[in-house]
Structures are given as C-alpha cells and as structure tokens.
Length: 114
Length: 117
Image (cartoon, rainbow over all chains, first blue to last red):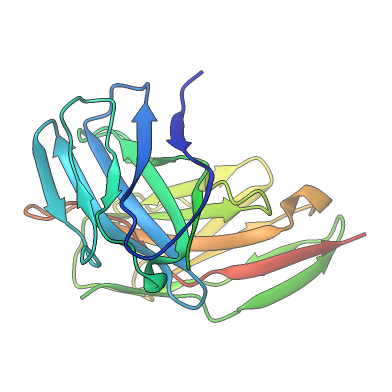
C-alpha cells in the first residue's frame, strides 16, 4: 500500500529536550516536505527536499532541522523544542515531474512542548 | 505573493443535499494547479479534487465537482448528495508551476463542514 508514515503520532515533551519525528514514504517520491498546522494559521511549510541531499527552508524554518540521506526518509529534528512549537505536524511527498502534483500526507504528529 | 481565501469558516448541510464551498485566490501566474483537500476528524489530509489552470473543463470526482472561474480567480467545491462521512474541514490550496519555485502548496484557512442527519 502506497503511504507516508510518521512516528510518533503523539508526543509530549519538555522544553529543550531534543526530539526527532520520522517520516518515510514507499512511493519513490523525489519531493518531501514538512508542514505545521495551527488553528487560525492553516498549514505552513517548514522545510522541503527536492531529492536526496537537497533540502531548503520553507516559510517557518526557525527552530527546526531536516536531513535527506535516503530517498524514502525525511526526519524533522527539533534540537531545543520550545512551547511555541506545540503543533500538529504533517509530512508529505510527491513526484517532482509532471502529472498531477498530488501530495500524499502522513497521518500527522501531535506535538506538545511543556 | 499568492494567497488563498476561504470566506466561509463554517458551514452545515442536511444529509443528501448539495453544498458549495467557496475559494478565491490571488496570483499573477498563468500556470498553476488548484486543489481541494479534506481533513476529517482523524486529521488525515485527503485529496478530494484537483484542477489544472489551463484546462477550461471543470474537474469532477463522483459527488464532488468544482466551478473554476479563472478570470475571477475563483475555485468553488460542490458536494452533491452530502453524506455524514463528508463532515470534515475542507482546505483549498494553490500550487504555482512556474520555474524557480519549490511548487509548494499555499493553503486557505479552511471551511469546517458539518453534514447533519
């Protein structure tokens, strides 16, 4: 089954404790992206990757890091989480070529930073 | 900068009836895609329908159809024969296909749709 998986689905942590949210896709997609969703602000892109070893900042990259060492994986790293990073996070992927540009989303990770 | 506006924060409809969700966008580009995504209470983002800007024919997917008015920059979603499972937040999104951009999705703030029995 074609899918994007994220782990963990729920995470409660404390300020300053480094954490990683994993994202993996099995569709051989070149493009992967992280979004955060906040009430009243919609979905905002954090980072994206056009392919292996190619990453770039989205609209709200402060406080986040990413890496793309393998095509299927795109982890999101919070080196020193703060309460303003409490949010719902989505990983998404798609092909970069022509043909629909449909983004496939993971199930989301609900992060609470206290 | 491109923006997407959904002017109806909340809507409701009776089961089996038809409802239309509004979306307008602002862009100076000619080559782009428009999407409607559905987010049910499970929070999973699900693609409902998409429209290529250069296609004049409105996209349809079963009970879902769009009214794409390129000159007016309007992209409304019509849900026919509404079902309880259609209860969800609906997001309109825009993707610029121009060169030199990451073709990210630009999102509206969503319309919360409740289908009542």
